[in-house]
Amino acid sequence: MSAVAHVITFRSSKFDVTKERPNLINPIAGESVLAWLREQLKSSSYEVTTPDTEDWGWYVYVKAAEATYLVGASADATEYTDSDIDWTIQIHRERSLKDRITGANKLTADDRLSRLIENIVRAEPAIQGVEVDRDA
Image 1: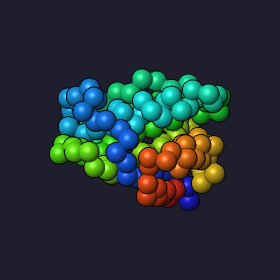
Image 2: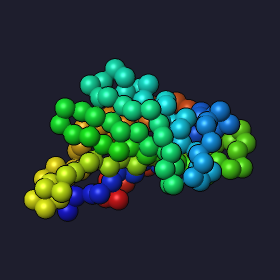
Image 3: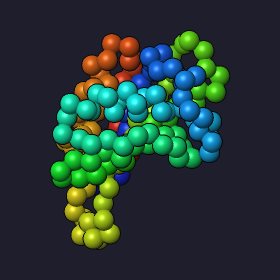
């Protein structure tokens, strides 16, 4: 069975949540992580939208030739200090109704975008404790 989402968690003080726009739905951080990730993906073949809010955090759409993804980021940073914050990145592959009925275009363990995001996160020296769940 394939996963609905891939989830990457980590700790870092790299992202300044005090400079994020307010999430008017819920006071959840995530814009700074997605803005950073968007810059990292610029050199790839992906198109990335500007971060926007959702009730669970922040999201961007990432487009590739073969698929579109919703990538979300969130952290409870309401009591922000200069210490590390626990972050979550979610990666969801968009699928049409036909895809769902036929079982096509599922998010697989070796998904190219998911692996790229994991590699970007792991390569950042200011990020620690990276864990990946490909069965979320």
